[in-house]
Structures are given as C-alpha cells and as structure tokens.
Amino acid sequence: MKMVKSLLLGSATGLVAIAGAQAADLPVKAKPVQYVKICSLYGAGFYYIPGTDTCLKVGGFIRAESNVNTRGGSFAQWQAVNFDDRAFNDHTMRARGVVTLDARSETAYGTLRSYINIGEQYTSAGPGRIAPAGLFGVWTNRAFIQFAGFTMGRAVSFFDFDPVSSYSNQTNTWGSSSGGTGIFVWAYTAQFGNGFSASISAEDGTFRRTAGGLLATAGTGYAGYRWPDVVGNLRVDQSWGSAQIMGAIHDVNPGYYTSAAAGTGGPGDEVGYALGAGLKLNLPMLGHGDFLITQFTYAKGALNYVGSGLPGGIGYNIQNGNLAGAVTVGFGPAYDATYGVSGGLDLTEGWSVTAGLQHNWMPGWKTSLYGAYGELNYSTVSSARIAAVAGPGALGSSAAPPAPIAGSANWSMYQIGSRTVWTPVKNLDISLEAMYNHLDTAYSNTPGYEDKGWWAGIFRVQRNFYP
Image (cartoon, rainbow, N blue to C red):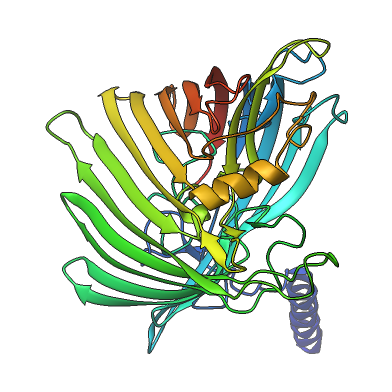
C-alpha cells in the first residue's frame, strides 16, 4: 500500500513538473497592436496618427516635362532672347517631385489644419546663353496653419481667383497668380453661409514689387520693406460655380537719389493699388467637369497684380538679327513707377484679362482653349524717362538694340493656347500644350523696334498620388 502511494505521489509530482516546464516554454502574450485607423472627417486619404486624434494625409506628385522655345521648365515664357543667337538654349527638360503633408484635428474653435509641401527638381539646361549642365533646387511653396478662420504662413494670395491656372501648364505672364511660388500671408476669412465669404489679408509686399521696381535717371529703386500689402475679397462658391471681387493696396516707397548731381533727396512715397474680379461657370450641359473661368485686373503702381509673370525693369526684350548685322527688338518695359520731373513719382497703369474654357470629350480626355491680354500705359514724362535710361545698349540680351528710342513706352501682349490631357489610368496625366505669344512693342515709331510673335510648347507626364 505504501508502495502504491509512493508511485501515485511520484507520478503527480512528475506531471506538475512537466506542466510547469511546458508553461514556461509558452510565448508571453503580446500587447494589442494599434492598427492605423481611417479618418473619414475630411475626405479620402486621411488616417489617424496612432495614439492621437490628429488626421494626416500624405500626397504628392512626380512629373517629367520637355519645354520647347521657353526660358526654362514649367512652360515659362521668354523675356529676353535673340532668336537668331545660336548660343541660346531653346529646349529644356525638367523633373520635379513634390510630397505634401496635410494634418487636421477638431477643436472647440473648429478645424486646426497645418499643411506643407516639399519639392525637389532638376532642370537640364537653364535659360540664357550656354547654361550650366543642370539646375537643381529644393523648395517649398506651401507651409501654413489654419485655425478659427485664420491662415498664417506661405500660401496663395487672397487676391488670386485662379492662383494656379486650372486650364494650362504655363507660368502665367498675365494675371495675379501666386500659386507657383506661394506668398506669405496673415489672413482672416469669415464664412457667412450658403457659400458666401469675405477675407482680409496682410501679404508680403516684396512679392508684389515688379522686379526692377522704380526707374530714376540716377538712383535706386524701391527702399526697404515697410508694411505689407493689404488685400481683401468677397467670394461666393456654389453649385453653378464661383465669383469674386478683390482689391489690394501696395506701398510704393522709393529709395533716395545717390548721385551728387541729383542731390540726396528723393521723391515722396505713394500708395499703389489693384482691383479685380473673377468668375467661374460650371458647364455640365457641355460635358461633365466642363467650365469657363476668367479674371480681370486693373492696377496703378502695383503691376504684379496685373501680371505676376512680368519681367520687371527693362522687361521684355525679344530680338531677331545676326549678331554681326542689324538687330530688331520688341520692347516691353515694366516699372511700377518712374521718378517724375518735379521730383514726385509717376505711377504706371496697367490691366489684364485671362480666360480659359475646358471641355471633357470622354472619360480620360480633356482639352482647354485659353487666352490672355494685357497692356501697360505710361505718361509722356515716364516714356521720356525710360527712353533716357533704357537707351542704346541697355537692352541687349546678346546684342545692342537699335537706337535711338523715341515715342511712347506703352506696350501690350496677348497669348493664345490650347492643352490636351490624356489620363490613360487613374492619377496619370499625359499632356501636350502649345501657345502663341505676340508682343506689340513700345516705341514702335523708332526704326528697328517692331512687334514680335513666337510659338512655345510643352510635353508633360505627371503621376499624382493624392489620395
């Protein structure tokens, strides 16, 4: 009996030992995995950052393009060129990649949003004469915070109605577009319901200075930056489309004369301004997604609102002619103001209109037809001032222009173009675009100064990965 008890106790002890050993070999139970959770508050592509109530969307695009008869990538138009100068590059290629981050969360004051994009690009050959082997750059044109109706940082100007042309790949000459580079803003937008809103914004005034600024026979252009441009708009967005009216004021503060002959004083400060209106009409009766969009702008002493792509100062200098022979030139000067005879500033007036119509032929195919026109007008005093400074030899991109300059500095330019986009698969756009440019020259009664026209084109492939 004792033997039986001993066997039973031994067996039990052995089983307990084996069970304990097996339990020790079992893996420790893992902590629950925190999977990414979809955030449906702000549309497709957002997800919750694990452990937070912030929703994030990651997006971007990659593009490759080939530009013909332009001054660089992104379909930027010629500003200074002699088409008969064989040293100029009339073909460039560019690759660009952009990544965007859009973070949003809900607060007691509404949505808190922060947005940034970071881009990198490489251009095969820059504009001008024999260029470097390639131009490489890293940049960001959006970095802003939105909260309780405020927008703060680098964004799009609240003056712009179509900040990045919705119907063309071009870097606009006319129009107030700031979308390509962005602009620093401190803005507030009030929503009134039913699509109506109003915005007031303090924006970077240096961005709106026409490069080259102000013209004096001897002296400087703009003085230091003192206060931002003040921009306001009234806007409506509804099912039929959108409409906006806008205005801006701009500090025109000249630097001082620097020559002993001119003295040490300078003209007084002036306030330039711009007024504009924009309209977009959806045209579903023509095709799904069809639209017509247009913007008109008038400015005095603030020409960048009329043409954000205007080359300041000497401006357009489009030439033809053998370097060893006669050269003809189309000239379009762009100064916000000139130093008047009496010592004051003579503000330049200008206006522009842009328009585009886009039609979707069928799923995956769309074509746009667009046009733009603008002109700058100078007083008799300003025309004489420009002629005195921008005289023989001052315009030459590769050769001196004809001389002398006499008459009116007024000039105009129009552009007509078309773009067709094929989307063979979702998020892949293949586009071909051509545009004709025509410059009606300043000082047209001067021998050798004549109107100029030229074609430009771009082929682009872009893969979007915006969710």
